[in-house]
Image (cartoon, rainbow, N blue to C red):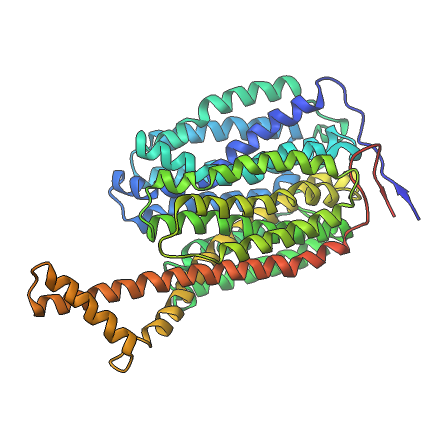
Length: 525
């Protein structure tokens, strides 16, 4: 049986491609701010006379507010009207960026970042919702190629741009650069974007689901704090993290039960009853975990193990971003001819192979080999975002577009936070395991170890060092080599886990509808 997809409500006015570019610029600005701050945290801590651990609250506060608002953005859109709410978010995000840039104390910047995350949370869902209503289903895959710039390229460019600005100017400019972008975007949206009758938010009776809102705030807020602070607090050995985990479980579990029970939920979870949307959410979660994990791993490896500066560590990611932009265009061209689920399955399989290749790390690995690894990783991601986003909304009823966009974006962002936390935790855990394994060979009963120790001692004595001092220095040198090699092996283990995840998710793509996207139209069989 074939079910034709209904076109969106008729729109008048600006070219939809101009609309897509303008609304994506707003989302790009917001997504960029989720990663651009990371490399500047030590500089912020120094300026504010705070510890590095205290400065991470500037990131945590943003993620907490952002994650909560992402979920309820559909409700706020219905309450205020989509265009009005979108303009409020752009304006206040720009104002809060200015306040962050001129903050003079840590409490100030934490509060301003909290506000920035609150208003930034409405940008991505509204961007996707506007694009969904601006394009008919047959052209959405091409439109989502534009949104990929915000979703995939922005997190990649964030550390690069943040590192360059921080190294050459001041960390304050990572916030202040949002001001001209925000002003241009605000007036462009005002001129180009038009509300549909169903999204004006005028004359609609809206009841506020306070119970659902409270449970979402409790669950997602505690969950984000647990993810962001877990590594520093040694996870569940900390009573604070245990409390956060408990609150997260109560809040999220209670919210799911309540939102399915109540007649007028603050976010409609029934959007997940659509199979394409539900499987699409699973796909985007897996993609986000891998995307954000990999975006952290290589820069961290290059800075901590290879001695790169923040700028050079960020530059490792830039060629991959360029390759990704080109590949997204190519993928948009092939979607009318190949079923989307085949493209998605191939993308995850390619991504798995890329991480298998990235598993081949060596202590003397050069810059261009690392760039090559990242390019292969981003090429796999290029086959994922556009087809996943397009097919996820393909059969979703139009009245659920707002809630669907909110849920889809929330899943993606929370999965990104999970990916960052998991990769950091795995690096620590696998580093300890590998250190215990490698250290087991550094014993008086290991002839290779004794030979290496003796050779190192002779080399130091040849420089004029006394025998006793040379022996101690040789021990210290080999211990440093033990730490370095253990950490390198830990990175290899995490890359292997990313590869395994990608390979496991690839077959799930075949649960999606067997459709081709674009061209003359899309039908679901």
